Length: 345
Image 1 (cartoon, rainbow, N blue to C red):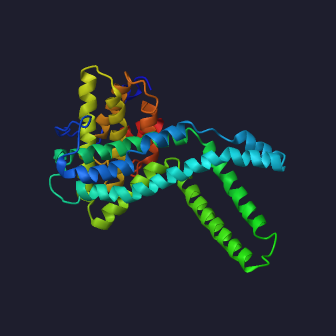
Image 2: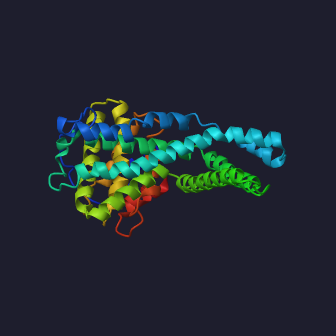
Image 3: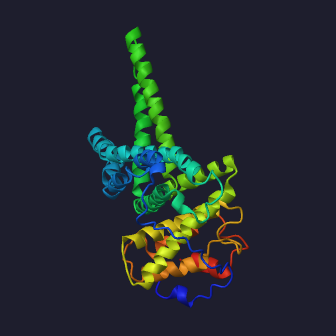
């Protein structure tokens, strides 16, 4: 990226002063009042994350085995391919199961953080633990989708699994006609299991078809919650507060020439909060009246990454996330300088 951003004239967009929000996102801990729901949601939405990322990092494509099974379709090659893809299938089951927990847990989280109305713009200290927990979810979502994009063969592996599953089911249940009530009952039970597995496989396939499946899950779940409860203003204000805290933390660290894991964390949370805001607020994050200063955020991404060596949070990856996941970037009201920079990556 070099000095591309510094050389651009990003005119337009808001130039609002970022509000001072005194919240330590790095060291926030749950208060006694929120400890119960915090522990519940932490176990549901945060505790599994390191293991899910580990599974995805250790993913091994079954491309060679699948290629051999297709080129030379004998029992040995097909068995090898089947055994090679089973770990991937198990992993995808876990990923999809976690996304279902997100769909269940995010409304519970937002019910506490946003539903009670006033004070959400600056008063993050009211729910410090849950605010930090929400940020940890956004951090995980960014990193998971980054790893998923880098492993496109995972979809090919699962497609082979689905084809084999369907072919095997058809063969299994058309070869013979049950000759006794016991065999008929067992056959019907096996058929129900196969149909359930096929239905789950279809849902998993739709889930991983998106380049950023976890982010899409968070966007869809949050949007549905906001629309159902008519909380667009309250939720968007709260997301703007998360953005402001991350922005301030990053710039404070940069001025002190400090580089730490908190920078990487805040970069990812800042970008995902902008994307979420852009989907929740009717005018989006790029509008002139938006409380989110996108221009300054882009400059911060570049400045911090001059000393940041984390590949996941590189300037290119962060800007690409904005480019491909924002809702209002291509609106006519979006300043050309910002749009041109984001689209040039």
